[in-house]
Every structure is written in C-alpha cells, then in structure tokens.
Length: 154
Image 1 (spheres, rainbow, N blue to C red):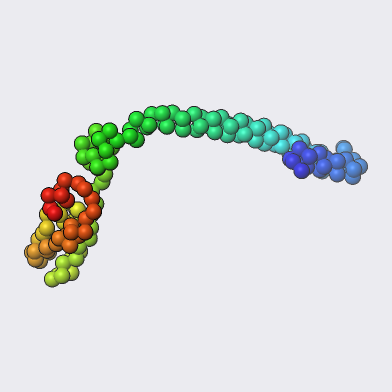
Image 2 (image 1 turned 60 degrees about the vertical axis):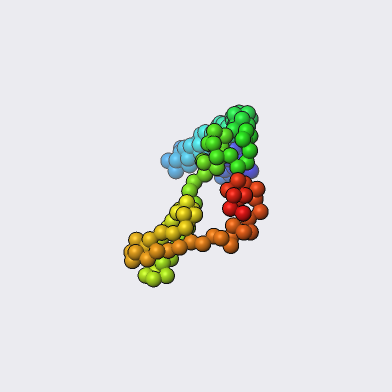
C-alpha cells in the first residue's frame, strides 16, 4: 500500500463510524485526515522529483565517465616506456618517496628513512650517532631486470 491508499483507508474507516460532524472531536479528526492527505501528496511529489534527479545524475555520471576516458586516454600511454624517469608522461618521477623504518641496534631508536638514503648505504643514528650501514649486495645479485644501473653493477 502506498501513502495515498493508506490515507484513503483511514478516511473510509472514519466515515464508516458515522460520527456526528458537528462535534469538535470529529472536526479535529477530519482536519488530521486532510493534513495526512496533503502530506501524502507532497511526499509523492518529492519521490517523483527524487527519481527524476536520480536519473539525471546517472546520465551526467555516464557522460562524465566517457569524458574522463577520452581525456585521460592520452595520459595513460607512456611514450617513453614503463621505466620512464623523464616526468613528461607519468613515469616513475611522479611516484611518492617510499620510507622504511630502521631500528638502531645500539639505542633502539626507530628512524624513518627514504629509499634514496638506504641506497646510499649508511646513515648516522640521530640519537646516539652510531653509523647504520645498509648492504644490498645480496639483493643486487638476484636482480633479473635489464635496466642500465643493474647492468653496470653486474
């Protein structure tokens, strides 16, 4: 049952009681039923408007999706290849720096260091001054890529 049907049912129940229309209580009851009828009409209109807006939003979203596909299509293709560092086509330069947590064995201080610092090979602990060394020689031997840096190291 929708709202209008429920209001009609209540109106029928009230009329079936054969109440004296001159009494104040009956006038209040009839006014409440009229108010409910008006509210049901307003809610029905709002539901229809909401459905219309939802359809329009879906259409705009679909159109936007097509525009995004067309617009970003040019940026998705790497002109220089997957390992591009030039920054012109979405290569590696646009990625955020990666940080690693390193714990000093002497004082237990945890330090967040960037990948670049790790690749340098060492850093001094800011708390105790101990030199922390990073050895990646075992990892470099296992490298399977064909990049220039790895070829020079081999």
